[in-house]
Image (cartoon, rainbow, N blue to C red; front, top):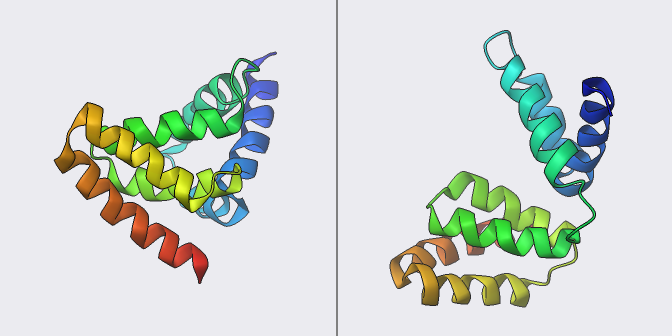
Length: 126
């Protein structure tokens, strides 16, 4: 694929995983300062990595939740909790991932992640 095709493929996957509303908001907020970064994450994260056939999206979501929780990236974690639901994870499976984080990344990381996830799940439920 060339860069344009990779961007198009990435945008398709990005919309499927994160939802149109989130992607539309990100695109609408893109300006000269952030345009290259938005293109980069669309092509690389979504067009290259999330599009690979080696792992299904449920598995990718589990890994993403664990890494974001471990690194305390709360905003991204909340976004990917909602994405995990779109990718077929249940609320209980999200909790299981965060329990795993508690064992391997520490209770404080999991405690914070549970707080973020609970709020994201509450908002998602309406």
